[in-house]
Length: 96
Image (cartoon, rainbow, N blue to C red; front, side, top):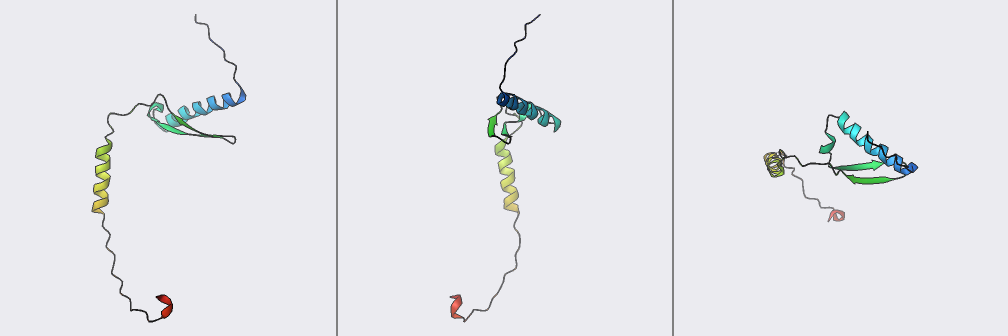
């Protein structure tokens, strides 16, 4: 039988631990594997902390170059047509 180590934590350390557990629960609750979460923010009334997930693993399926090219092609294809607005030249000296 393994002897379990019991750690004494300060109140702020307990809050951080619970926040990390919340990340795991929230990501799993949304149907995401917590290893797919690259980074995030932990926010509380006392602090705002940025974290990087040490368990994050880059997906081999994600090809950012293909995604970038697809987005750029969509942008190039989107060409809205706007009517030309013709205006009479103003003779008022305040508009020059």
